[in-house]
Image (cartoon, rainbow, N blue to C red):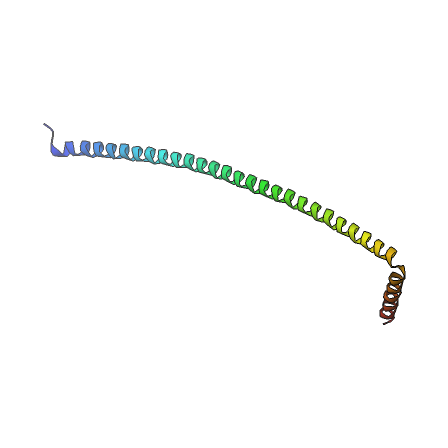
Length: 120
């Protein structure tokens, strides 16, 4: 018949074997969780990259739109300035034709003032 001391080592071996199996199971579970976290992180990174690219594209489109708008405004301002300069030139020529002596006296006076200012 077996004694208690003969049975004790078997129990210890069985519990050690069960503990090792649980430890392996925990390791596998942990490895599975780590793998899932890595996959989730890759997915999040890809999503953030897409969102970043979308925002960059939106900003670029907005900048290009604003550039085109400002370019149109600048061209319109130059056209308006040319038109006003042409109208002023026409008005000046008409005034000189209507009153040539007054225009000449004004030109002489402006020339005299500029000569005085340039001496100092």
